[in-house]
Length: 138
Image (cartoon, rainbow, N blue to C red; front, side, top):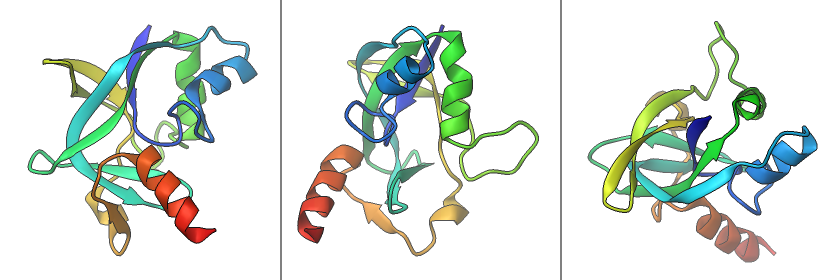
């Protein structure tokens, strides 16, 4: 089992919903642990967000799941993380706030250099931001 923090399209109801990804691959469903927060800056890449870790920034909100080992390669594929290759996202372990504790979680941030010129999501919540943005576009 791995514990993972998802802040964008892997959240429930989003295009890469973690639960649906597991189901599509015949993998046991992940277990929602709770809502987590991490210090960082969230940016709009168009169809997905990118998180830049930043201890001086506000909270970025996401969901914490316990996932079966078999789901980790599926997440790497969705995030296009490949061993030995430079990619937009990287997989790392960081402490994520859960209730009043910090728990180590896998997550997929981007480098600060990747967000130049992109819109910052000030609320730190991709789902809230995307819904409001998509309504404004229609």
